[in-house]
Length: 231
Image (tube, rainbow, N blue to C red; front, side):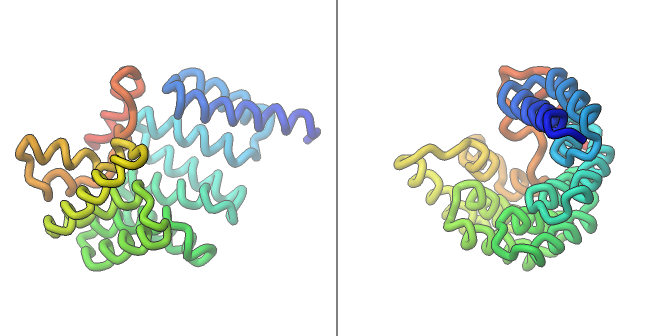
């Protein structure tokens, strides 16, 4: 494979990610992924891009398989290993998600996203003590990053630790007064739902959904993601 061809494939893979995650244009992302793979069928990030497109289309099991293909091409790239784990979680393959995430921790125990996946997978398996442990570890490793704080609050709510969950909400609210905190980090919108009187455990029991973070201004992508969210 010539260097120019490889570089063009990388460019198409990057275009796919930008189109999907920033422009919310899934058709353009799919076209860019197709070009990237035609140029270099061993480009792991292009294959992962195809997995992302499949996931947004609601084809979760196919996306999980594609994510494994990408990971196998670059088995020591942590983000690809994490993606494989979280895609298996979203496909409701919790045992596989746990196995992949634990494999990742063997490579780097300080990579907090692996703990994030484990926490939610253990919630679904009703292994609550381990779920809380993994979520708390992610917060510690990440120096209390909002994304992992939100996940911790979500796990606390799912296991019935309501008081601890609202302590996390308070911490995030205080943090938001000093810096930007994404709405998705607000324990999946718990503070807003609390005002509507929805029980905390019900808000948190389902785990993260593919629809989170997709704006209302992207109706086609959002509707596709909603189909996945209610699987």
